[in-house]
Image (cartoon, rainbow, N blue to C red; front, side, top):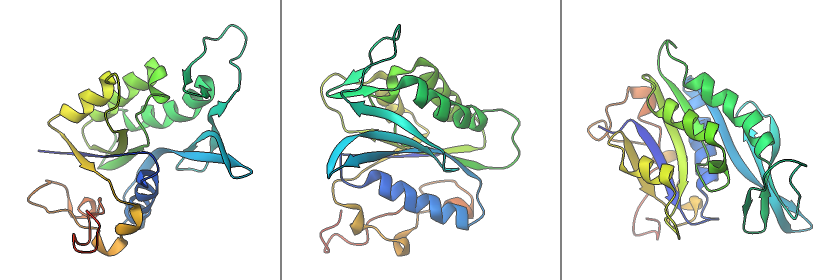
Amino acid sequence: MARHVFLTGPPGVGKTTLIQKATEVLKSSGMPVDGFYTEEVRQGGRRIGFDVVTLSGIRGPLSRIGSEPLPGKRECRVGQYVVDLTSFEQLALPVLRNAGASGRPGQSICVIDEVGKMELFSQPFIQAVRQVLSTPGTVVLGTIPVPKGKPLALVEEIRTRKDVKVFSMFTPSRCYGPESLTVSSEAFPWPTSLRALWMLPRSESSGCI
């Protein structure tokens, strides 16, 4: 049975927006939620990179256009973006390791937005994600990219896990709304507070999948 939920879809479709909406609903229900999301950074209307933002509001650079790695550090580049691996690990790893710690009472949600090329330069991140996915009592709400080019090992591992449900998203997130926050209890054996975890399409007739 699926325990974890991941969204996939092309860039710009609104995966992060939907993750943020779902997080708000979960927090309002009293469910413990921690994790991080990625956010575009724009300057003069032009995207210059991405930030990583924890759910507690701490922000740091994930990548920037044309930036150079620190002396003695290997360059981690995705297209025109250079990844600031140190900044990413300083923010993301503590929340993941906390979520993956054993012996935590009750059920909790860990948001991972996203498991993508930039984040996967970090071996400690890969290990932390695997640990969280295997931690009893922790449900992961995350995003993964659509398959393109060379497969990403951890992404494919996540797709094929029996305890993961992947939702494909190919229409803008405006097609999803808080009133559609339902997940069938037959489909997912989550407690009541977790059945509002995901935003499903309102209707096919409206043009939203």
